Every structure is written in C-alpha cells, then in structure tokens.
Length: 328
Ligand code: NAI
Image (tube, rainbow, N blue to C red):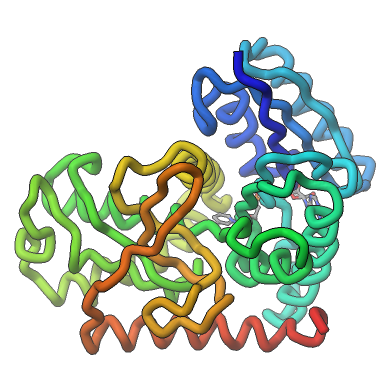
C-alpha cells in the first residue's frame, strides 16, 4: 500500500471546506489508491474550532477507507507540519465598509504568516494551491514568505475560470466538455482574467471556427465567464463553493497525477514567458507530467489578446504594489 500523503487545508470549516474535504478523503484528488491524512486549520476562534470539530465528526461518519488520519489545528505551524500538499482556502472576506486596500492588507498578513509556516515545517516538495481571494496575490505573498521552498511549489487557482469557460463553450457548440482541448485562461483570478479559446479544438476542429462569432467572444463569452462568480452570488445568495472546491480538486489532481499531454490552466509564478515579468503569479496554459508543470510555449498573441493580457497584468501589478511594504 502507498504511504499516506499529508494534506493541509485552511478555512476547513468554511463553505468551500465543506465541499472539499469529503472529496479529498474519498480519493477524488490524489487517486483512489492514495491514503491521505487531513491536517485542518481554522482560526483560533471558539466558534470556528467547534464548527471544525462538527465537520470532522461528519468525515468520521463517512468511514472513508482512504482516510489514514485527521487532526484539527489553530496554528499553521502545526497544521503544515510535513504537509505534502496544502490548500490555502481560508481568507479574510470583505467586510462592510472595507476598501479593496484593506482587504489586500488583511489577507497579506494571513498569507505572510502561512508562507513562513510552510517554509519552516512543510515537506520540501509541498505543492501549495491558494484559493482564498485575492488568490494570485495571496499566492505571491505566501511564495515570497517562504524563501527556502522552490517558488514553483506555489500556485493560485484559475481552474474555476477554466472550467467555467469549458462549460460555456460546450453549451455554445453543443459538444461535450470532455471533447474540448487546448483552452486556457490568462492572468488574474478576477473579472479581468482572459479566457482564450483561439487555440481550442473539438475532435481536431477549431472551436473558433465552429463558433465563428467574434462578437459572441467579446460581448457574451468573456463577460459571462468573468462575472460568473457575481452571477452565482446573485442567484444562490451565497458565493460559489461546490464548484470552487471541485476546481481545487481538479487543479491538485492534475498537478500530482498529470494531464497526459493535455492543456489546463494554473496560476503559477511566471518564468518570463509571454512577456509576463518573472515571479508574477499569472494564469498560463500548462501541461503537467511527473508532478511538474510546463508552460505551453510559442502561442501567437494577437492585438486583442495582448490588450486583454496587459489589462489583467496591470491589475496584478497594482495588487502587488499595494502589499509590497508588507513584504519588505
Ligand atoms: P467562508 O467564509 O465560508 O470560509 C472561510 C473560512 O476560512 C472560515 O471558516 C474562516 O474562519 C476561515 N479562515 C479565515 N482566516 C483564516 C486563517 N487565517 N486561517 C485559517 N482559516 C481561516 O468562505 P468560502 O466560501 O469557503 O471561500 C473561501 C475563500 O475562497 C474566499 O476568499 C473566497 O473569495 C475564495 N474563492 C476563491 C475562488 C477561486 O476561484 N480562486 C472561488 C471561490 C471562492
């Protein structure tokens, strides 16, 4: 039997946590033959810790055969100990009267502390996914706060945007989502992200040609994908949680187990590809093999795409500048 992998999850008593933990313990993320140990972090607050205990009681009651252990934590220094995999979901939501700047700063503090804790106690090969918003900038901060870990171990979740784009294209073309290949999303996990189907194919045919409607791309597809989070809050009265958890499962699954040559989207520290400054936590088309992602190279960037990429890069640069003083 395989040695269990230690999976740390923050914000474990939150909405996304409630959709995520059960699937991890069920083997949906790391494989049906891979035992896991869950190391769950919540804020020290009594209510949050009690809610976490409740979630753990339910996980116990599922009697998951792959669950080899489970612990509750209020301190990242114990939660991240020897972690092979860390899903940083917990974040500070925007409160009433809170400016964007306050939100950035509150989260910068959380992700500085958590980055340092990962640096100190996690496995040297830990794979980190940041889900908590602003996800790209939080991932950047955690990466910068963990200088002894390879920068490539830190990623941000763009997969929900990627999956949203897949589902819109499947609906438009009437083809199954599984048939769509070579789709990607560039940039920040925010409404500025650029979902790009110029290279996408279905059974070898160009999706762009199948759709054949540039106005639909600009006026329907991009706004629908970009504003999907808001549309779900409007409809459900709560933010997207199950689909976010599902995207986190997909991201980690593909990072650990590979994509078999297919493209996916990950928010990763740029290596300078496509003119994105090195270190910027940016959504790129990638393939994954043997636990390592590689940016898909050599894609032509037309004028419209360059404009969109510049816009999302500008937002990320501003976010980074907004927290620079906290990293100094
Ligand atoms: P939630 O508010 O239901 O749960 C968050 C949980 O995190 C709470 O239980 C809270 O106590 C905990 N928490 C806060 N600070 C923490 C810390 N420092 N350490 C440990 N736990 C902490 O929120 P929900 O719906 O689960 O969403 C979580 C985050 O994911 C939010 O920031 C949300 O904006 C983001 N999100 C990101 C998406 C993406 O595509 N990247 C998609 C959807 C949500």
